[in-house]
Length: 271
Image (cartoon, rainbow, N blue to C red):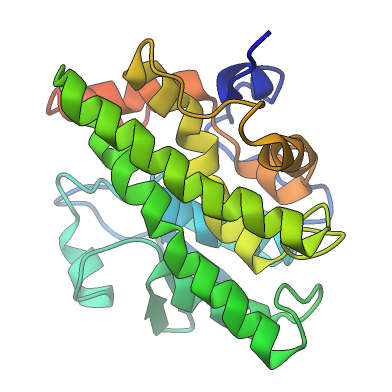
């Protein structure tokens, strides 16, 4: 029987509570609801790293994954990206998430914040020690756009079956690059025997692939017969503490996307 990613993830944790479920060894000071225009930025505890985020943003999820993987004490301030708080632009001129703040100093952009965390908190290391292999992993982070770009076209095809079919075809072509690369490496994860930076950087969109399946209707986006190594990788990634800590179900992603498309994104919906 054909197996898709929806069934592959069906036994994963069905979402997260309003407070992230961190491992017992990790102390999270707080996580706010999504603050909007006219709000006041919560005071920050000295010496504690803060992540500015949006619960359903895959780029912010990248940073949240690394914070958990590195066991970094932090808090999370979520922001409403439709009616952004004024203070967000004072901290980040781009008005985007994710952003990291510590003792008044700011960093933003997902790859930059994740690279900072890997260097500032070196245990466990998430990049290969070999410079060439590290650069090779960064190349594949860029190649991931061949998956994410057409995924967004799937989301917003709006009944255009020809555009939808082409978008699904392009998603599959992009995934094929990663299926082939995982076979070449001969390891369980792109990072070796444990997830590395490349694994974490692509995971947020893999988590959302079942939502693409829902949007694609009868078209199958990601099947085990076509991508056996990636399916095995998904099963193992679900067991990772960082992935399970920030996981949101496909149904919740779909519900949020629908609210976003309808023009009233429900940032604080229960998941």
